[in-house]
Amino acid sequence: MSTTAVFGHPPLALADVPAGAVQTSPLVPGSQALEAFAPTSLAEIVMLAPPATVERRGALAAALKALSPEGRLIAMAPKDKGGTRLAGDLALLGAAFNESAKRHHRICHVRRPADLAAVDAAMAESAPREVEGLGRTQPGIFSWDRIDAGTALLLSKLPAFKGPGADFGCGIGLLANKVLESAAVTTLALVDIDRRAIDAARQNVTDARATFHWADLRGTEPALADLEFVVMNPPFHDAGAEDRALGQVFIRRAAGALKKGGTCWLVANRHLPYEAVLGEHFKAVNLQGEAGGYKVYEARK
Ligand SMILES: C[S@@+](CC[C@H](N)C(=O)[O-])C[C@H]1O[C@@H](n2cnc3c(N)ncnc32)[C@H](O)[C@@H]1O
Image (cartoon, rainbow, N blue to C red; front, side, top):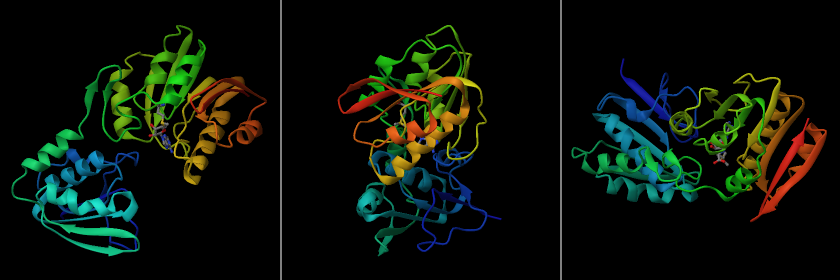
């Protein structure tokens, strides 16, 4: 049987995902990396292409490389999230395609190009690398090439922790390395939904007290209990409804993982309504700092 793949969760109304297609998005824990498939090994790939340019081109390129010469890539994206740029990306990659529009998406049926020079270049451009001051990182990871202002504020406020703790949405591990400066910390669970972030964090955080969990905090993994502390810069930034809901999940998960008296340190955009959620799940909530549009809270269970 030929191997087929899917990247992300393309809307069912826009394309049939072959039964048994292997999930390849780095944002789906447990999936396989598209770039790890042998060249020409895939008969079909259906892709909901990522919104960010370098990441989208890299994903399209990895799909084309993995595709067999007779194979087919169906790539789509909402018009306002990269869809209108799909055609330009595919032309740049040297691939032949037909484009159509449906339900606010652009949809391209694409063939593998014979010359893979542009494909290889796009894959290299989106590959992991070292960035001075950050360590290992990769386009597509949150704030991949600079320290986020919220993260910087939280870094400047974190106290010296003790005992077991967790870093929710750890990214490349900046908060984790700060936390592990305290010798009294016994374990630190780094959790992120993005495989690229977890891979980078493994290389940036070499302390034996750290464990790494490629997981969606909306689920029940990893099982965490009786922690002394949780640190987080939750995905609040875009201020969309989805981000707010995610932030609330992070806060609830932190409250569930902490022991009585344990603390959650978090930074968030100061315009967002997080006080109510914190107040619901924690006994005491203290503002520990505010700058550049961000607030840092310490919430005690
Ligand atoms: C605002 S970033 C913070 C990253 C890092 N802690 C820092 O401060 O640079 C939020 C992180 O949460 C991760 N994330 C988003 N949704 C998640 C989920 N449902 N489960 C686990 N991690 C998630 C993102 O991949 C991202 O790395």
